[in-house]
Image (cartoon, rainbow, N blue to C red; front, side, top):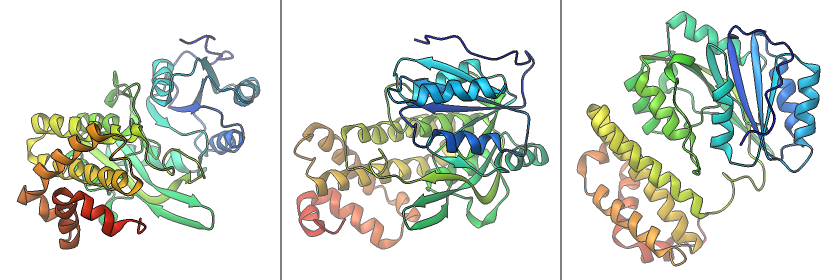
Length: 333
């Protein structure tokens, strides 16, 4: 439940050009840096919606401080409900013609939204994206740009890129036309929430434009969900990829093999993680369900065209001989 009304400080009733939704949960150590990067955007017509998701550190006070100082910052305070519900709360009040998402422990290049908006307008695109700069202690690399340096592609081709792990599942380095995601919401009570939301947006889109610049800065921090070991929430990746495959079969049958390949890959990665970390015995029901799914998939020969030979063989090996696979790969990661 939202406990406090939106603070808008006399903000104009007319829609702003871009609404950026920032869920905030216990991120006091990084929040100011994130907000300062948004306030430095060269594109001025932006509203920033902060959704404090029941933080118990000083994040709520930081949100309110910035809202008092900057008229284009809005704050919502809600009881802790998770990332999906925080983003959904932001979507409910966003007024921009375009919608973006930023995580409160990341930063963005000062040109990011200007570049993304220019891509949409020049190509009459529905979604624009940039590459993501991943920053870890002692290492920085750029990932998730379109393959081949393409600047504009059709939505079906973008879905293929997504299913082949070349587009990036995160909604954060992307800008959406408001009408494309009207009524869409992130699935509550699940992790991996970006993936089904992005698929539904692409199913509604016609064109996607892209920049190869790594304008979104994603920080790989110790202890983050994406960097920690296996936990049961990661089973959501299997559920989401299975549901998306079923959705694609009916909505875009021409790319169903790509969606099935993605589901197979997610299943393999999760099974491998469970085996190597010993969770197959802790969660036998989930493990056996995924193992049956992988066994059905690996013998679907058309899927093989997406993977090199050694990748195909490793999937078959795990599907048929999971315990032997675990013994041979134990300690190798």
